[in-house]
Image 1 (cartoon, rainbow, N blue to C red):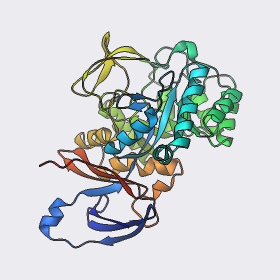
Image 2: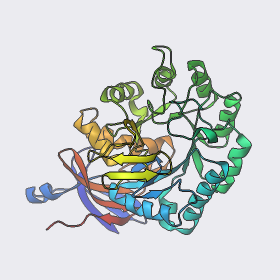
Image 3: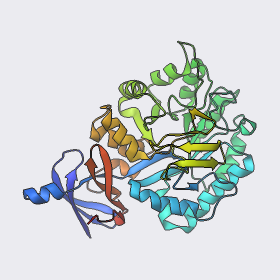
Image 4: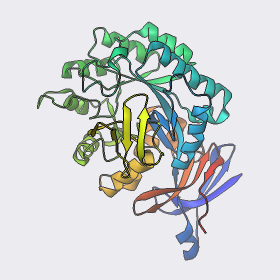
Length: 389
């Protein structure tokens, strides 16, 4: 039995939670004196990242895969409050994609911590637009037309763990492909696209349900209207994932997307392996020379105007929404926890309720910064911040 005392992130009232067998067994109001009240942290459901490419130097797309990388990243992410995530494999050669997927599957089968944390795999490409701008940093030579037979081979390598596929519906035969994916239980997300508005609408009718990093992986110049961004916002069936690091999207775009999508808006980190690393110059397999600034922005060394991916995790994104008055704290946290859980039909969607999985985070807020104090995974304290004397 594990007993936790903290403020409920929704009601802001002190509560006592009893946990046994990895499940929330009881939640009771708590009466405490003022000194204890001031010392209590806040408690909330664990964070869930639908798109993350690596962390703290561990790259999920390394070729060849690095043994133990996913396990080390999983345990390191506990300090960021991440209790479940979708390791993301991006456009590469067919053999490299297969090897990356097999490595994730092997890690899930050999490491209990990884198996508990990996809710599925996000395959971002290679069925994306070959056009500059829309393709983003994905290598042109590896972009392919949708091929369900190939996807099935990759799914076999992944042990059935591919749950999200980012693709562009601009390809001939894309609608049948999307229907096949939906029937196979794979969530199709529109991203890195040059599709027409009509193709976006047709893809939704075929079963597409999400937008990958809305507003990024897009052309620098688009027709005023119509264009695929407006169409993605207008399609009510599409959930919008946003990178809220303060660098990928202007606040105005985040605000509009959140207003339009409401509870269908979520945030992702889309972090690369340099997330969590100190500022400096680095060389990446995709992008080459890059610079991570002291402000947390990652850009190409040869052109500081071009981003080289995200280097920030979900607590940073939550804090950005707070600092810019784009969301209440509860809304910002839910955009990175219960909303993605509900969308992906995970049991963590229950949040702080009796019977829910005990995937929890205890934290404090310091000038709108999220300071993680404890992370609980399946009822076990897996991270506790060092005490400061």
